[in-house]
Length: 275
Image 1 (cartoon, helix red, strand yellow):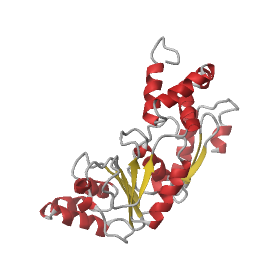
Image 2: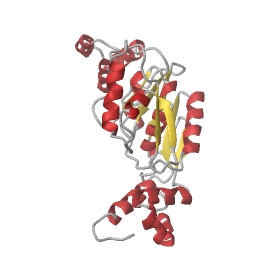
Image 3: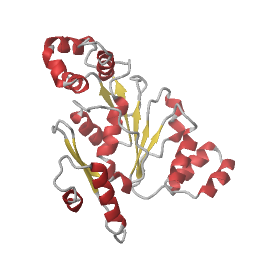
Image 4: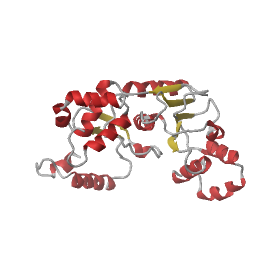
C-alpha cells in the first residue's frame, strides 16, 4: 500500500482506483499465502473509524447497508451480542409496531461487526422470498459447502429432511443465521436448528406478542442521535442555519430513522430549503 501511494508522486488526494489496482496486482504476484486480514475505514467526517475482520475470509451474504450514517445504536449492538452469546435465538423487535426503526440495519451492522466470531459463516434469509430451505441450499452450494449434484438428489427429501441435511453438512465453526422481517412465526419454526448447536439465530420482526425467545426491543433514536442523522442527510450548514426547526422536525417524526430519511428526501427536491 505504501509503495502504491508513493507511486502517486505526492498528488493528493491520490487516484484511489489506480492505488487499488496496484495493490491488487501486488497481492496477485505473491504466493497466495499472504492475504489481507482486516479492513479499516473512516467516515468522511472523520468521526467514525472501524477495523473489522476480512469478510472475504468468511462465507456470508449480508446485504449492503443502505444507511448514510449509522448512529445511536452502539449500546444496542453490544447488548445484542451479549444476548446471542447467552441464547440460541434472539429477536430484534419494534417497540413502535409501525416499522422504520432500523431493525434490519441493526442486524446488518451487527453481522458485519461480529462476522469474525462466526467462522462457519453468516446466512441471511428472507421469509418473504423463495422457500427458506431452497435459500439455505443455494447458499451452501454457492459457498461450496455442498456439491451442486446434491441439489437434485435432495428433491426427493421432505422439506425438513433438506434442512437437516444443511445443518449436518454445514462448514465447521459457529454460524449466524438471520431471518429478516418475519411476519409469521410459523414461516420459520421448521427451519430453526436444534437448540444448543453451533448455530445462532437472529430474527427481525415487528411483532411484540407471542414471543418465546429473548428479544431486543428497538424504538426511536435519542434526540441527539436523530439530529446527528438529519445533519448527515442534509448537510451541516443547512441544519445549523435552522437548528431549532430541525429539532422540531426530529420530534415530528418521533425520532424514527425512516421518518428522517423521508424528510431528507423531500428537502433535497429542487428549490426547497429545510422543508
